[in-house]
Length: 361
Image (tube, rainbow, N blue to C red; front, side, top):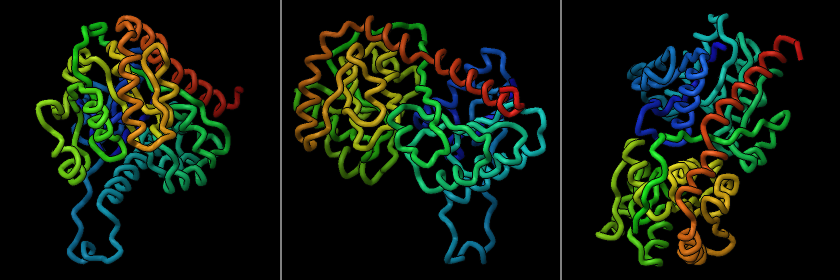
């Protein structure tokens, strides 16, 4: 099949990935190519060209005139960049009759709004809970538009879809190194923002008397400076935004991975990655994490109490996961969360949509 894929217009698809959405796009694109499919990837400049057969960069936002730049109703720059990027990609696709399926990973409404006239079925993976612009896209979408959600929990939130979405769990890649030897330290990984809850991990680590290493980009500098930076010392270290190889090495030498979201996490890719590297997971029971963290790979902590109770629950759960064998954690992750199953599920869905569009099913 010839697949056109819209990546996010906010970040290039290159390591170290900005987040789970970017990592998912990279893994799926690479996995599709390994199966012999042709991938045309629309993405930000700087995207790894080896991920697709063709990488089409989104255009840069043109410089505004002096008059337009002071318009009191000027949209925020991110909105304009997104709109320019997706308009360019959709226009390019309208002139291409050689595409079998369009996969929208961008979370932008334009591919959905134009799905009525695009030359192929449009599938959108919903990586987040609903927000107004995407609900607008759903309302404007053609009859052949289809949707996938990354967890059953996320699917339940999308109440405006015309029919239930297909649930395809995000997959993670096994690099072949196997489970690590572990260590004494705890690890937390992700974007350093309030909703990801790194400060809860710090409190849980101190409660349990364990060192903690934080890995990830600073996405909210003011919050980091005010909340996280004052906590950094010999026991709590921010090791930076690591490459995938560096992150895997760090997690493999950690006793357990803490996953502490304050929001309803749509999936929880960091939990799946930690398990694939053989490291047990302790996670707050929010959103899709219940579908990722089975008792074979870790423990879920109730969020019914206040944050102090959650912190205590995380510390208590560390004792329970210490009995898990790392080889078993790795084996279960390969069985339940491997990238191969995710890619196969998407290929199956692509074929169903193509057949439906052709009127053969």
